[in-house]
Length: 276
Length: 334
Image (cartoon, rainbow over all chains, first blue to last red; front, side, top):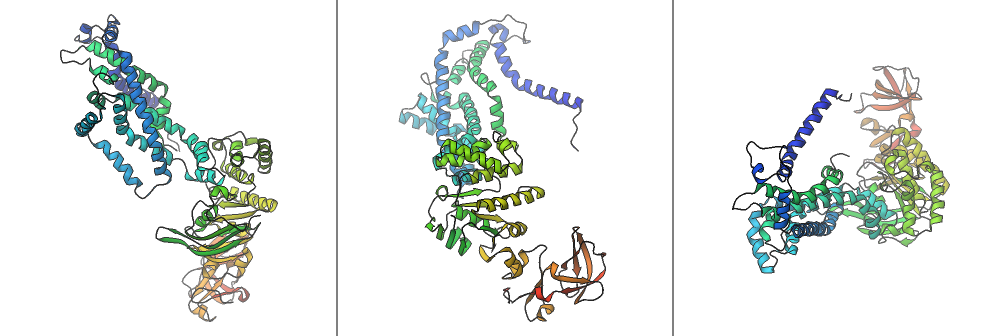
């Protein structure tokens, strides 16, 4: 007998889901609200939720003080570049691991993932020195390479898991049907893998966009992306919460909008393999 | 045309030799079934013929041409897989068209062949659907359709009916047999089900541990199994294989008697025993009879209405004309 879900239970479940959702979303909402307050209201005690004089002054000040467009452009180029470069390297790697595995494949995968367990600051010093030596400090190229390398294990893992779901027999059928390796990849593998490639791309774009440790440590002015733009408003001279919030809102807005429109794709990407 | 010849073919996976040197000729137009228990190497053998696995040594000839190093795409063979292996992102029509598209066949000819295959396989109404919207039987028919349109030298079937339910399996078995009669193309069919082998094959190849135990028509294998393994594998229910004093009376190591070649009486007979489980199939009843001189119960066939109860005493008399004799090495003694 199937488990019956009562109406009451459904209501409770829905309410609980909304509660968790709001709890997670609240800090973002608070940031957005604060960005429309004056500095005085922003630090008011007790805090004001909605009943305040809404102002766009913070946005005006932030836009005057910093070149938002340049930071945005850097973010897009760095996150996009790191994602595309990562896919370019990870697709063949994941393909060979999924379809022509060797006895060491599992070990290699685990080893790759284990590099993610190392705290990034542990390799900051050597990477910083390498960057100085190669003249990559404060360049978009340098950041693209570092962020790509940081996310590569995840890209390979995700693609590998996705490719694993494609039954080898279908590829063999294509071979029997007279398909060359090129035809096999073009007409059979890629169309079947596109949802997986898209979710991987999306997730890694978001990860690269939000990455702050390397972007803050390896950039100064020229290559700084939006993370550095936010950080520039948390200055030691004193916090300007409203302006910081406005900068944050401007930095996360593009990725929030992207995430909103692609949430279906993202969820399927994060849960693939879980349900047949 | 579609004669396939294996000469001294071997296959090893690392240090493990799964197919020791093997010779086999599959005649043009023949329906050949590879049968054996799981892990006997029958699927591997099929994949070697297909070219999906490389042979370790030996030669494969297709229509006299050395095909040993020819890639699967160029061997002119079509394969139907156990999992159907349809392209999930393509409609049925595109699935069937795929091999023709790869071969560069003109579009109007493609459409003509698709229509013909769809009519023959009852798929006309489903051509625009995706494989995911079809039942198991329909999917298997699409896979067969995709194989037919190529007009291959030979069809290779790798346990194509294993994923279907019992009723559908019987229907598809007939369809494939009819297809073979109509096309008269060479077919190689792998199965672990000896009933499929018996009902469909012109020629059965019985395999065990990569070694061919016997090659012959279904009735040849039934009447004169070359050894104890084939005797036990072909025929349903299994042949009773008896060794010990009873076999020694016949001067051999093992005797074999099929369930259908034993006379049953409630009054007198050669062996006396107790009835255990009776399996009533309607047309027949299979009795499991425990005789004190044999370790294993004997299986015998009685008529459907045979009046017997659990625990009854019963007498069995093997038909001497159908008694199989095997030596200590398990080989048949003529």
